[in-house]
Length: 280
Image (cartoon, rainbow, N blue to C red):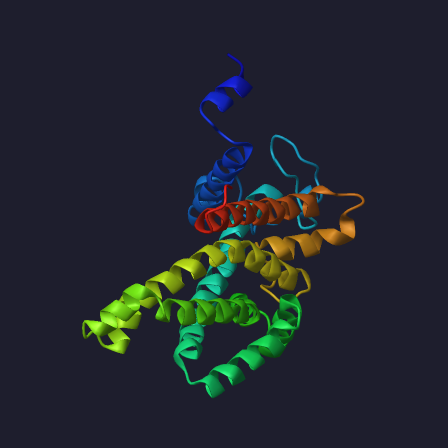
């Protein structure tokens, strides 16, 4: 029996395979981010000018950078800050979006209209441009980058939370709860908020990849963590000037960013399709 025939008999679709491969890859990234010491082979901050710009080898799997630091170990240790900023920004955007969107959904029409017009204005600008302006005002650093990415991403969550809140408020089970004497606050917490949070969680899965990419872009421009921090965007920026003679300095952190973002997007889009009742 061929592999194709086995997949057909088990009804395994290529998209299912892609989903689980992406989940597995993200699981590995999570382990690397949490326990980098188990995977790294060198001290990511140790410099050795005599070993500068060495190509990939058995001693240095991804080569070395301009300061003689092991690129592989720096990519490993860079997973924590890079993924951590994306997760923090997405979590903050989800929470803020849930609160503000729900408030707009239950607010009087005048307040709701004003809030949505402000949200529309913010949505008219590219997210990265907003994040760039915010972090330029706040200054470089992990936390400031996370705040900037959060502010840029939160309008999408506000709009989705507001729409779902207004829809679920009119649902039959919510109306039934009110008829039975359940107070408006309790009805919202028990019957409306979980549904809104579920929709936002699916969106957040996709947003993690976007947040990681935005944070890496800010670091690439010199507005994120500073040297000698091991962070993917900062490493990519440091290798752009030697891409012609030492391609490995920029290529490997760039691959780490790309593969992580792609994996997060595949997982997020699959979960969203399943939540919408579409065959993923």
